[in-house]
Image (cartoon, rainbow, N blue to C red; front, side, top):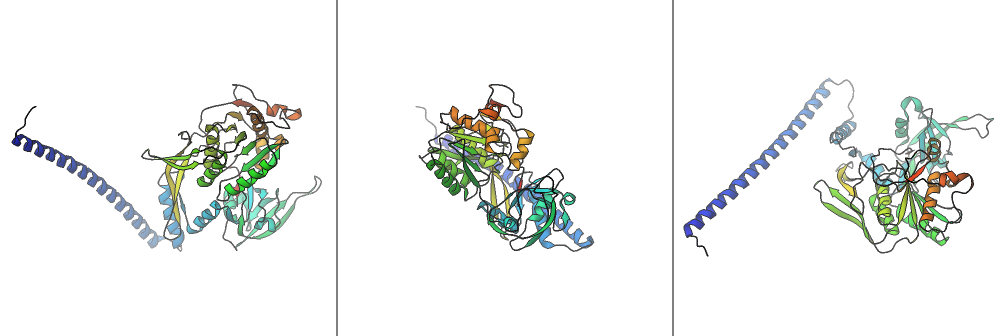
Length: 452
């Protein structure tokens, strides 16, 4: 065994200590310099903002609305992050956001689309909403809002004008279609007092004789209870399987989506997120109970966020097949932080992963069976005028249930819908055709309707 003198040990310890101090000093200096640079940059930002403020207040002709100015500054700061999902919410908009996640909204209570003339065509009037109480009807066309013509102020600005606080009034110029082809449309004025109303996010029905159908429009706090009630009713009616329609689902509350997945899927991970440091966090998991029958999930280019994750997880747990079109590819987790004055900021803090650990942000989810609607069918679907028996994607979803062993009473493929229900193996897909698919591809889309 080799021996070291006391002096050598002391010298070695001294060298080690010196090296440690040197490394610590270098690290500390680098950290200090970075912090100083950061502080200097922020000071420069505040100085520039102060300079702009002083100059404008000295030279600007007009009155400054301090609230609007502050909101504008905050909006600009968040926009400067370069995060497309980052938003500044004024106190009023933050209240509206909180109401939206709970399934309650304040406004008129209608869904609209931009028609070929640039006006607002009503596709749905929410039951028990101010719009229904005022007599608005599906098919009505809003041509003016508070005396401003929609085509002149643009559709987007008109949608914004429909918004407002409870108790406020909005005046709509409405063109009501003629009841017969020989008749002429009627222009009426409708005054509406905005109020709070509940928005139903789940619709259900029985199709093809004994197939359960549930459409989820968006995931809100009330969605899981609505979904469970609808599923229970369908099961009690003796359905053989479930078609879950997530087309044009804008996503919404991830916790609510997790609760719906818990109803359908076996025990295991449901929602994982990965932050900028690469740390993966399990946010939600499911218990052992699950839906026992086959499932077909219908998606399209306007299936966003939480809805994409629901679809992907149903496939990854081998609970069902996906039918339709490539989804939107919005898989970021945004954090909403309330501020002291009642406003809030939201920004991206992580990306969501499927149960199997796959990120889908920017890529979307590719269906197992690609089935596209024609341009005419898309328009009918957007307007709510495409019945299930004429909807190629729904017919394909029912056929997919049969592939999974469901005993469907009315089999798609009979009569005039035979072409819509058929699939072709391994060919390029065009509108109205079908082919099995796998993998993920990039897709950018936006929801086709506006709610107010």
